[in-house]
Length: 153
Image 1 (cartoon, one colour):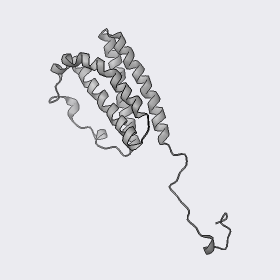
Image 2 (cartoon, rainbow, N blue to C red):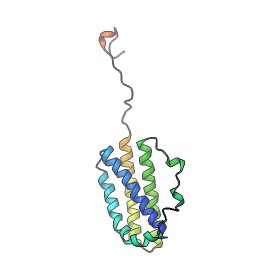
Image 3 (cartoon, rainbow, N blue to C red):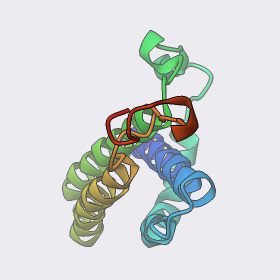
Image 4 (cartoon, rainbow, N blue to C red):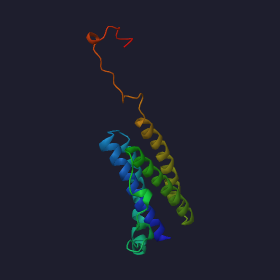
């Protein structure tokens, strides 16, 4: 169980950091602060388990270490964000369930609340990426080169 908890804490921090850095440095949205708060909210739970988890870590032999084709590339910033939002949500759900078994109801509740916060942030951030209008085609014209009015051109 400790190995599962360790892997999920690692996955959670990594996924949150990827989203947070994109939101902060590329998209320049204030939402990065909410992501940072989620990370810091979970930090004490992870710290309490750190020395329980560490001996069970087996990075060298981990089957998840091998690359999967779907992980080899991301075709856009959106797909990178989506992949990491899903990774974080799935991990939070796993930790929520595992900590119920560990009889850590308060930790389980924090993971559940965090998961719903991430759902809300995903909607907010991903919808902010949608273009209001398609600006991929621009018309450049000059009324001196046409006998038709500009509106008709």
